[in-house]
Image (cartoon, rainbow, N blue to C red; front, side, top):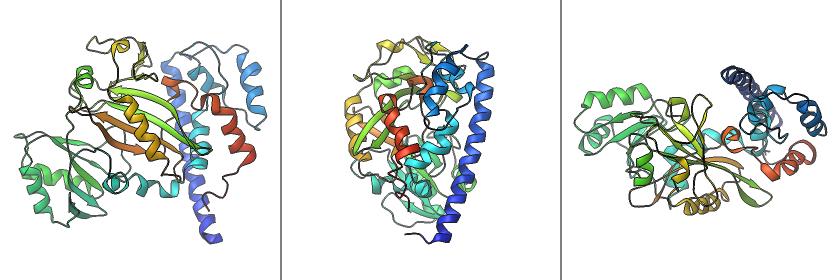
Length: 363
C-alpha cells in the first residue's frame, strides 16, 4: 500500500491531468458543434429527459454534449456519457492511470501478449536502450544495419504516448539511406519501436490499399465479465498511410456478425454510405471478426488494472488477426456507436457515483 504522502501526490497528479483533459474535450466539443451548425435542436428534451436522468447522481451535464450525440439519430438518449465526464471521472475510476505508460508500451507487447500475432519487430528502444527483436542489446549501427537489410516496408513509431498515426515514419525499400534511419531514430529520441509493415487481408486492402485499416474495439471488465462496448472499422483516405478520421478517413460501426452498418462517418461529421473508392459499407464483412472478439475477451480478463481498453486489430493476408496496439484511455466511440455503456449504463453510474466498490482498487 502506498504511503499517505505518496497517495496524496499521486491523487493531485491525477486530478490535474483529469482537469486538463476535461478542459481540452470541452474545447473540442465546442469546435465540433460549430462544424455541425449547432447540432441537434434539443427543444425541451434536455430539461425533461437529460436533467432528471442525471439528477440522481448529483450531476447536470452540459447541454452541448447532447446536441452533438443526438444529431445522428435525431433523438435524445440521456445515457450518453459526456466526454469531460468520460475522461475526467469514468476512465480514471476504472483504470489505473498511474500504470498507463508502462502498460501501453508497445515494446512490451511480446511479453504481455506473446501468444498473439503481432507485426514483426526489427528494433526496440526502451528508455534509450536499443534491442534487437530477441532482446539482445545492440548499438545504433547494428540497429541501422538491421533496418537496411530488411527487404520490405517498415515503420518507426513511438512505443509510448502515441495515437492517431502521430509521429510515424514509413520506409520503403530503395527509397531511404542509413542517414534517413539514423535521423528518424534521433528525432524520436527514445521509447520507440521499428516494425515490419502488415500485409493486410484483401477485404481490408480493397477499402483503402495505402493504409493499414483496423478494427477498434472498446472492451470493459465489469462485475467479473468482459463486455464489448463498441466496435468500429477505421479506413484511411486515398494515399494516406494512417486510417484515422482526422487524416481524412472513415469510421463505420460493426455489427455482431462482423458486417458493417449502412453508413459510416467522415472527418466532416457527415454520415455517408460509401467511401472515397465507391465501396458501400453495408457490403463489407470484417474477416475473422468473431476470433478478434474472442481474443479480446480472453486477454482483457488478465488486465484488471485497466477495466476500459481500446484495442486495435487488423487481419493479415493469411487471414490471421494481427494485434496492433491497445489504449487504456480509449475514446468512447459514441459518435459512431451510440451510448458507450448501453444497457449497462445505470449499473456503471451507480458504481461510480454511489456504491464505489472499487474505491480501493488503486490503493
